[in-house]
Length: 327
Image (cartoon, rainbow, N blue to C red; front, side, top):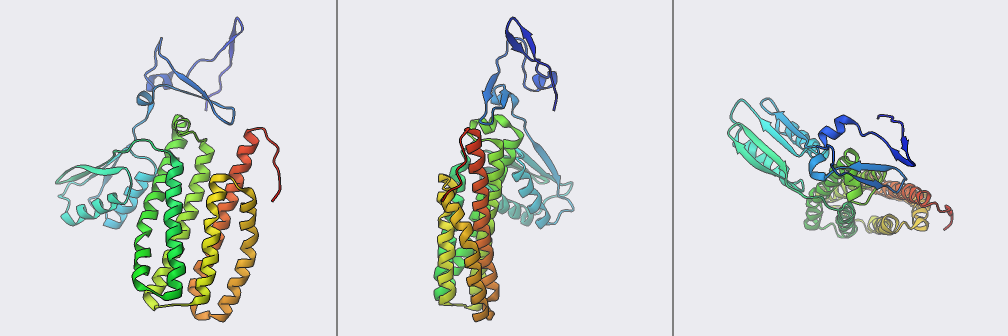
């Protein structure tokens, strides 16, 4: 960060732009820049998006790389916002490896394998900017579908529906990774935050919330895997899962409507629900693993509520309003 003094000339104020930035943004005498005041009172200065947007390109040498390691690296490159990643080798890349990477890429929204040779695979971002909130709404909906399915299969032990639930976990991962990617891009490029009408700090809140949603889905899927493996059916656990599902469903109002009374209600329910789980654990010790997963779902619902409260408080302060602590 640089510090510059403000110059005053005939009642007008001036500040010199950093030369290095002007060169990267292709700005010269007579060029036009845009100035935008953000909700927190700060200013951003940006040239045309096309001129300034930095392209992040990476190269990964996969010659001695196990397929699962390449998988992790490609996902990491996607999340941090790489525009393209070139997978290269001095030897011919096997067909099996190519098919594996192509399946990995299919699980990530907005990128494709656009070119390949015997010794390389080029993965590139082909997406356009989109709003982050509808993506989170989609993530909430998919995870809600999974939780409702868990309520049913805990009651009937249906292996077919358990497998369907397990299969939906890939969709949750795809949307979770997309939000994490967008947050990285927003933090790197404030003009993108302005274009999407959110503050960079909101991006951090969204990152936390979507991570919690993804973990809720993971625990729900783990319950489905237990049912598929062991043929479990327990009406009492199904009834409790219904309560967990209702708790999760109320998060939509907390997240999108900034319903603080609902957020505090979720936090208050947490302890009573966990006490109920302790009783179920005593009554059904053979289902302890499932009970642990249900407990983690309750915890993550509370974590989402706490983050939503943080976000609502921050927005209230920015608007200069008085914070009301009420239910």
